[in-house]
Length: 224
Image (tube, rainbow, N blue to C red; front, side):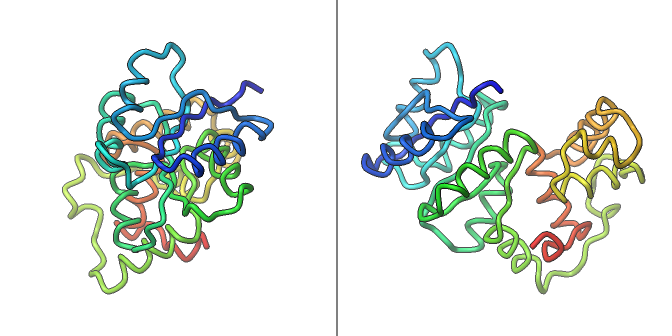
């Protein structure tokens, strides 16, 4: 298996070096870029030949914070996955970041095994949503009036097959597993996924899960 190239941006040197050591100690990952803030990260990305597959991004950094850096990364490097590292636990904040299109949100005090789990899940499935995120989304939706998909100004309604694929994506099935479950090819699964992205207007697979939860197509409790 090809090594997963990981970059990390964090202004806390001890934390950054410790996380880099953990990543380099894993079987399938390696650190290829370190930066102390969003500005230096973006400057480095402009000149390095091999771009990282994933960026571990701190939220609270000088010069250019994690939120603003995320917006630029989505615009300039849409294929790079983003995992936010933070001490912030406010549920509204977590949900807002997911809506911005990040692929995972981890607290800085998580165990190394969860970091590895998140990286592998983001590469394989496009997202990693832990209990923190799912509870945040559930609580965010509580008390809100259910919204009908057809009333949400979605450019086009979703077909039954697209809804089936969306449900399985949300339940963290891979493209191959979805293909086997629905008796279709992985190419067809990718086609349905691309149609879902176009119709919903979200950036990535993580966005599809957020879309499903916000539109009451999926109960976050089912994934806990």
